[in-house]
Length: 433
Ligand code: LLP
Image 1: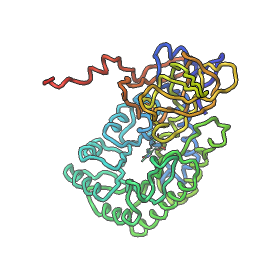
Image 2: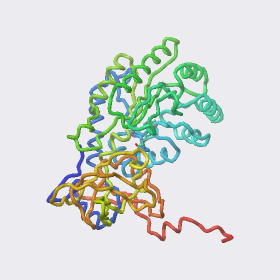
Image 3: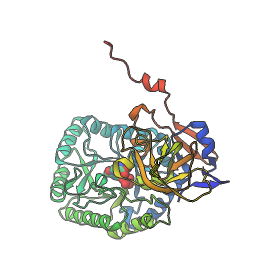
Image 4: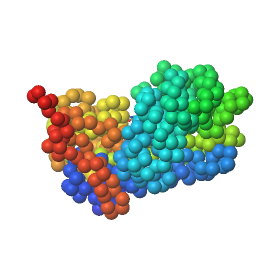
């Protein structure tokens, strides 16, 4: 459910006309809906709060929702979620700093990632983040040394590699045996015991994240069951396990809700499954959704540069957005619905939808049936709020795509498009040239 709808014949973001917005801000541009972000958080929060007994820890408290900042790290997006009480899952000092600046308290920030530097680990300790998720024995050793230097004992979780990979594409599957993430189960048990014996770290639990754009709950359930049995075993050894970080990964519909391939488990089903698995375990759960909160809260608005018709009947829809602005189709063969902002009458036509970048990879879709469009028309890419702007670049010297946040009738440019002069001014010329 989102707030990008047709009003008086043209698409709006909440109450804002995308035609007027595009006129003002230019294209391409990302546009996010505050109401949609808020709604997505509320739906998940409600689902989690319906299961406090199973997910809220021994005192029946609040399970943490820690938004995966990597999905969309714009400060205004983070601040919108922070004001709702959302925490943050971060993977770099930059993301921790963003979360703090947006108003997420350190006590709700989880620090994950497979290659945290010594400096980043030190920063996380000094900041007093809620928990550092450890991904290897070598990392634990480094953290212990850094914490010892500081006389600290940060809370840690061990991220388990459950040998259960899942997700929408091989490049976003993280839980498989050969993937770089997490500690294999046996090793994780030993590592937990070793960490528990150190005065310089405080193990509080286990973590796992098996992949992204997961639409079937089966692999997630298997991973959660594994965390449960590991918790029971560790406790049987006399070790304390208070928290389970269940990662993110729940998929979202990338096509209209009535499309057969869009059927993903709902947040309520997902949380109910987790609660069922963890029931009676007395652990405090954390969820790390990224895509679930952000994807359908954002679109990419683009203008048609021209329609190129070939003699063989092929039609190229050449847009002013390109793979540097939205890389998911090129990188993961991802599907994003492309819709005209002001639909024209007529029968659907098949287009090859492309951008201006000089490689064939800059193709968003081939032979995609769409209502007819003409040069100068506006189109949107749906489901672009997660892993869109954050993965953008200035490839082909196309200035960084701007971001806009809508809230009811108002909107704000929350990351402006640099001018060409500003883009060039960022590169000091080597002094011998
Ligand atoms: N927690 C951890 C430890 C993660 O690595 C990730 C995502 C998440 C949570 C959030 O996952 P989500 O709920 O968004 O599925 N760029 C790719 C997705 C990469 C996901 C990386 N990790 C894409 O555009 O599909």
